[in-house]
Amino acid sequence: MMEMILWLVVFYIAGLIQDFFFTLNWRYVAREKVFLAALCSFATTVIYMVVLYNIIARLDTERSILAILCYSLGIASGTVLAMKVVLHKEKKGRK
Image 1 (cartoon, rainbow, N blue to C red):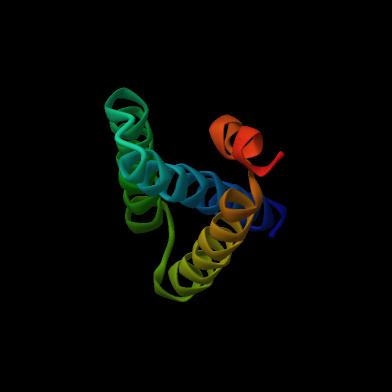
Image 2: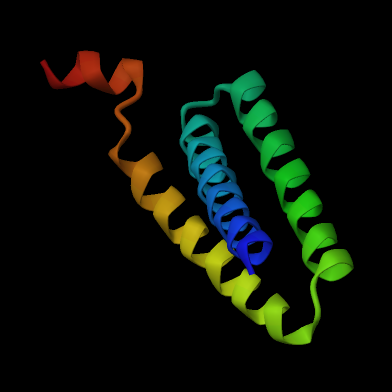
């Protein structure tokens, strides 16, 4: 039971980090920051593939649904967090 709770927390954190990078990726694309956009895109893809592999390989049908829900909640949280982060150039423009 404790191991399952740990995996759910890991999936939540992975979703949060993944979507944080995904949202930053779009913000960097909009500012034509090619290297930073590519770096965020790479990180997003790696996290997604590792989580997907672990959900399929490690969990049974019932626990997989719960893991997907925790992962999705992390993704939603990552979007909120990334939208709240002020990029350096934005900060200068607001003064």
